[in-house]
Image (cartoon, rainbow, N blue to C red; front, side, top):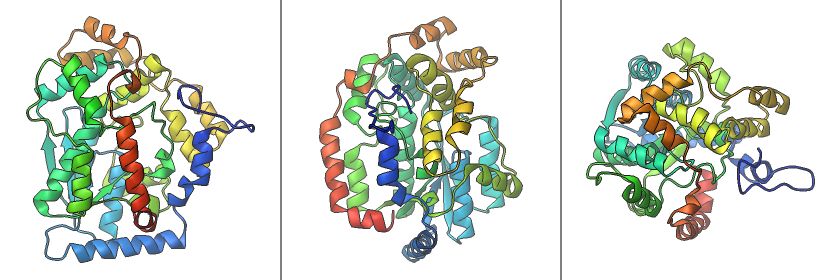
Length: 364
């Protein structure tokens, strides 16, 4: 990690706050051998018990990427009745589409697609680009949460299995990706930079989240934290068992997300998302610091194809390449430059974590 995170601090040993926090606190959420195995079996039994009389035991969000694909595989191996849900935001790569189809077919799981209104969604994406903030992909993040919870209600399911994990995502600075559930921030950006009023786009703020958690008792389960998860091994297994295809880079199962994380963040903010991933993997022993630094010596995107990517995205968003380039070159901002609800949300989530700490550490 480096000072592309505006809030980073270093101790006298040169260790940053992210790695010390990971090693002191977050490591407890990683795979712990027999204890994790027993916790996983207990969770699976609980999901099966709560699923009695219902069509499904759990819902898995499918992107076609390695994390969610491996989650679906594990759930099927454990005998869970899975409904796969995919958010179709119009940016799927061909590989991702094929991966989702193969997963549903080979694992014999039902699958539903949640399609966003394209005119509203592209206007939202342009709004976040014009705001010149790192979290340009917030519209997708919030729509995924909203879609999964809508399907939960539809089928009266209590468990959403997430592909999120500490092994590869345990480190992520707030200044790189601010809370997608801050609707004060979200609404302000659309009002200031958008051109249309949103009528169909599904939002998901803390009030909805607390309703689902506390009233409907919906739980988000991070199952990859309960298994020995090494991405390279998972990819090899998926290729062998499910005809899974690699899409060319982290999060390139979505062409837009791949562009944002590889080019936009790097060139506009000096943020190389690989730093966070590699730092997490160094802390868990999956890669060495020397191996990570070697990879970081290369650019996170392919210079030979980036202009074609920019033209593709500009055309799809309905703007000229000149206008798109002008948007990309506006002065960089952070979430703190806009109205937001950070203090109140921090208090709410800190309070929630303290109240439900025992349950969180034991299960999810």
